[in-house]
Structure formats: C-alpha cells, structure tokens
Image 1 (cartoon, rainbow, N blue to C red):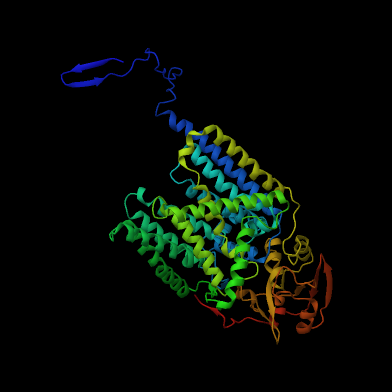
Image 2: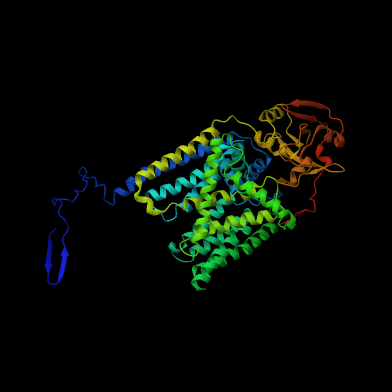
Amino acid sequence: MSTTDRGDLTRIAPPSATEPGVPRPRSAAPGIPPTDSPVAGPRRRGPRLLAWALGLAALCTLLVRISLSEGMDSDAANKALQGWDLLHGHVLLHGWITGDATFYALESPVCALVEAFIGLTPLVMHIEPALVYLLVLGFGVLLGRGAATGWAAALRAATVAAILLVPLASPYGVSLLLEQPDHIGTSVFLLALFLLIDRADRLRPWWLAPAGVLLLCTAGILSDDTVKYVGVPAIMLVCGLKVLSTRRLRSRDTAILVAAYAAVKVERYVRDVMHMLSGYWMTKPATKIAPSPTWPSHLHRTLRAVAALYGLFFNVSPVFAVLGGCALAAASVGFVRVLWLWRGRATRGELLCVAGILLNLAVYTLSVAHTPIPAHEIAAVLPLGAVLAARCVSPAWAWWQTAARRVCVVMAVAVAAPLAVSAVRAPQSPIPTAPPLTLASWLSGHGLHYGIAGYWDASTLTVDSGGRVAVRAVVRGRRGFSMYGWETRTDWYAASKHDATFAVAYDGPTTFGLIDSDKLGSADFEAFLGKPAEVYRVDGRTVLVYRGNLLDHVAAWLPPRYKRQ
C-alpha cells in the first residue's frame, strides 16, 4: 500500500489493481459498465422486480385454486353485489343494509376492481379473498421482517408465510380465511397501522406517521369496528407507555396517540355525512359485555378457536396438525419473548402485536357476540402471531448462511405440502345449504328471472347466474314474509319495480349452525303464498312458480333493531 506524505497529513492513495490481495474489478465489454457501477443497479433491479411480480401472481393463482376447493355462501355473494354497485356509480351504496361490519373500505372495493375486469361471475367470490389474503401476507412479511437484512430477513419472511399458509391445509382453514368476508381483511388495516408506527422514526417529515395513522384508522373503523376496539386501544396503550417511559410529552408517540383517538371521532363524522347523503344503513354491532358467569366458558371456546385458527384442529392429516401445533408454538414463543423484553429491546411493532392479540381475545371473550364457532372474530390473531414468531429470528444469525438456506428449504417444503393438498382437493361446499350452480342456469333457461328464497340461497344464486337471475332473501314471520334485513337492498323488494314469480325452497336439514328461520321450505312458502301453479325439483331445491307478484306478500320495512349509523 503506497502513501503520500504532505507535512502532518497522511493521505492513503487508492490501491493499485496490481497489488496482491486486491481483487480486480469485474470489467465488462466496451460500453457496458462493470457490475459494481451505479448504472448496473437498475438493470439488476428489473429482473428482480419481474421475479417478484411473477412469484406474487403464482401465489395469487394458487390461493384462487385453493379457494375454488370450497363453496361460497351468500355473505361473500353480497360483497360481490356491493362491489358491483360500487362499480356502477353507487359509491355510498344507497339503499343497502349491511351487517355489523361493512367491509366498505377494503373487500367491497376489491370486488369492484375484480368485476371491472371479469364482470359479475362466481369467480369474483374466489379472486377477491385471494387478493385480500395476499395483502395480509404481504403486510405480515413487511412487519415481521423489521430491520433485518440478508438471510435473517429471508428467515423472518419464511416464518410469516409458513404460519399464514399452513392453516389452508384444512377445509376449515380455507373456509375461514378464503371464503368468508369475516374480519381477516381487517388484519390488513391492523398490520399496515402497526408497520407504519414501527417505522415512524424513519419517516420524514415527522407528521407523515400521525397523518397515516389518522387515515388508516378512519378507513379501518369505517370498514370494521374491530379496528376501533382492538387497533386504536393498542396504539394508545403502546404509544402512551412510550411517552411515559421517555417523559417527553411533545413527541411523535404523542402525535400518533392523538391521531388514533381522533380517528374515532373523524370516522363518526364521515358516517354522518354519508347518512346525510343517503348512504348505506348498518346493523348496530353487539358491543355489550356478557354476564360474568359466562366468561369461563367463553374463554375455553376462545382458546380452542385460537388453536383452530392456527390449523391445529380440523386438519386432513395428523402431519398437518403437527405443523399447526408448531405454528402456534412459534407464535406463543414470540408472544412471551416480547412480554419478557417489553421494557428494553421490544420495538413498537412487537408491542403493538402483543397488545392487539390481548385486546382481540379479551374483547371477544367478554362480549355478548361470542358464538360457538368464534374463530372468524379473532382472525387478526393469526397474522399478528406470525409476526411475533418471525421477530424471534435474530439478525445475528445472518452469518449462518448455510443453515439458513436449509431452514428456508425445509419451511418451503412444509408449506408447499398443505397447499398442494388444498389445491388438488375436489370442489365442495362448506355449507350444505348453498345452492348448486346448475340451479341458476336452470332458472335462467326457463325464463325465471326474479324470485325469493331463504338467505343462504338468494344472493348466491344471483351471482351464480351473473345477474341474469335475481333472487332476494326473505324471512318468515308470524303473519307472512318480510325482507331479510341483513346484507340486502331495500329497493329489491319494491313491487312497483320488480315482478317476483317464483320461490326457491330448501327442504333439507338445518346444518352448520344456521339460524332456523333462514331455512325456508316448501311448507313455509305454501303456508303464506298458497298453492303454486308449478313445482319443480332441481338439484336438491324445490322451485315453486306462482302467477302473481310475490313481492306483494313481502313486507319491505326496517325492523327496530336496524339503526342508521
């Protein structure tokens, strides 16, 4: 190494390429920059981005194929119909009565996006949940990766992907995560919020983090109150602890805390404006606390639901049950690790995941909304636990590249096996009352284009037919039929606009925990509508054809339990 002395300053001259031990720069042909040139970076980035795009497209295709292994129900069909209305300019969903979670800010717009390309078809109900789950997976990987790089980042990403994909080995997991618009999409808002706060110190200017929290919280609460009862308290708790520990009131944590609290008020104002502009109606969610004697039984069922959520139960093979147990164990270790380190090395993202899991389990266990199969209400516990498990991988392991490669290969095989099992599974319906696709074709072919049915047959038939046949849900009462006031539109029941000439009856047993009033048999229709002019048996359903307009016998009124939100 040569040096050049000038007085008291010593300048180290650049090493010569001919000196021993100094690697030669990788030269290229004339006119082509060497590989370490800054110009070569974008050229390498192009193939890398292409590989990522192809990988995501392949994963999305696989998720769609897995979704096709299970049937869809009317909850998913109604989301498709709402997306169809959004696509055709009904931005505020005028006349709609939604459920106690609207999914207005994510699932319905994604349905509209898919329908813009393929129209209103049954495939929409499989592509939309695949895209939403891909978003959950993507934000989970980003949050689970943290600040790690290299093989540590690869191991963390593989851990998140494995835990999120292993439950898809079972029909129950596919039905829960890919078939129902029940709160798994809400995880996108929670993960995005926690990711934003976890990286808040890197954002410039400082107000980007609070502004993003305000926007995401508002949209999330508008879509699902789970964000209000889980996400907002978790943010306020973690940021409040940070403010107390640093003893700095004027800080980014204070701004984020205020933004999360303000989002609850802003969302209320947004909903009031939508109300004034004749927006959708929303069923008031059950937010009361259950009686204390029921808490132990609720807790037991909630813990079983957590195990089922991770794929521990309802699996097609004991091998996959073991994988589910490993996933739950890894998430538990990550959970305990953060509790152990919470006053020292735990990051904001890790603390938020722990707080989110605790709040989601506590809120649901103590709520009157608790049901015997509650896993969909705590769906966010799965991706949050996956993030905590991934954070157990220390960046200090990055030098252990050979072992890291082997671990990634083993995890890839472990995940590929259950996915392959789900992908090759023959299509079937998780709810026996879902009507077969051929019934929609039969109705359209026989000139029957508008009718009524029970909830689980109505909207599914509408989407199955691509909108050529419209079947509206009704519920029986003491004096007759009335509109089904859940995930429906009030103008569907206007006798002045529509002429309903048939009813679809299901005379099979009530299964899968469905409400008895949701099942309408032939006797129910004949009791209130009289003898039909024609009766057909088609694919397990009874089609009753009448001469008059059946909507004259359906009361289109809003029950008192529905409240404009």
